[in-house]
Length: 80
Image (cartoon, helix red, strand yellow):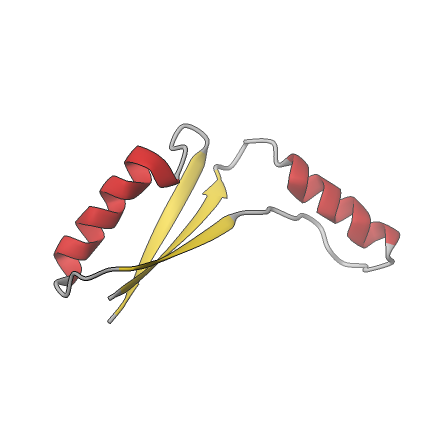
């Protein structure tokens, strides 16, 4: 089973990398971009076949290591 974890900064947390990308897009004359938020994606290949157990395991991974839950949110997608 594959687990895809998308991690992003929580609303209200300053995203300096997103601001830099936004300014660069403006400088390159890409109009219409009102905001940019930069996140990360982690793809895990798991031996687990039970979706409930797999999700619980990935939640524990996120809480312990993969995400800084003080300033980041995460979403998990499981693919059989």
